[in-house]
Image (tube, rainbow, N blue to C red; front, side, top):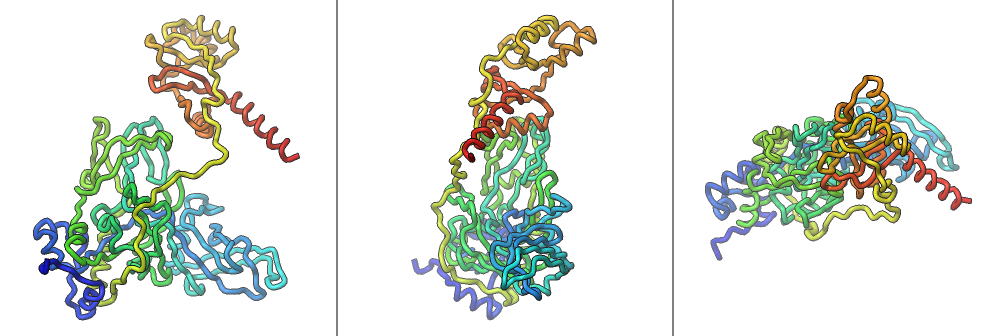
Length: 510
């Protein structure tokens, strides 16, 4: 027992002060533990530096502008046409990374404003107020730079996620998401996180990372405030809330960005030192990309029913290709491994140079919380609540004349076409029939649409409305898991439902 290595934060800080500290980056630590074993590694290494550099949408900055003359109580404020939150005090505001510009839309947002501030660029400020005895001014326009501001404090509610799921897309259309552009038919798979360099991968039980932990944040010193929003350690998805002084940050480690079709974000560089206090911590920091497992999800399916396609390691992801349902799928990282390593190296250099000391935990992060979905007291109507259940169908071997007769008899403009196994094979519309008659087609199979947009009975109606709008169609079949037609959703039925709800709400108001 006497040979067991036990160190304290104070002892390690003494080594930092006298220049004798041994610091290695997390990727190097996995090699050391593999070569020497955890016990010897704990004796040799004092600090392991981690790093990550990726899109962190839950980021933002508190700003104090100072008082104008005459003063104004800002009711609404815009920085470069990006609106910030003003429900704090007269001239305090919070600008979030994903807030879009009212002029440029999602091509420029809060993340870009934050980067421009750090870069020293002038920012156009517009604000309006309602006027009070102590704040009589009602509007102001001015230009500021970072130097002009009193306090500019970055406070990111959810950063440094322990791990992310991998996103891919099984549908026939491109999806634009917070996980980047997902090409159709499993043509790519996107992932984030720096793998073995990532902070919480090296301290999964939050032994050394917690409230009060000093960190490297975008080139400045910073601290862990507490658990991040959506902190979900039960499922291995822990997060951190972090803070730091924007005036000390560098654009090298902070970049505004836009995900096409989704919106603005902010790339944030975070490095966290892990003190190697004992053999147990040394073993955890010896983790490699081959040890870190995450899941591949199909983003083409409704979130509630989104399946796990497979489990995969970061070693596989970093190879550039993974197999999904028998298909070789290219992988792409949203985070930068080059910059994550640069963060870890910069933190290592500062510790070795006596410019960065470690801090003692004030409080450990909880390890038993789990992420819950939003409670909804007014549930969205589902497809099954309003679909037409008596659906007229026709066999794919039928003639144009038979289809035309069915449309005339039922006054239905969309008819699902079934295969010999009674499964959905296509769909024909009244327009298709009239065109076919004009072109003298005879068989239904010649004219029907084979790639049919469908709905699931448990799908929220809101998603179906989006499908109708996206594909410019007015009806779609509802199918079960065997592609058997069990109903029909039409724009007419949706309009009736919306009309009833509006009339009901109006009656309540009067």
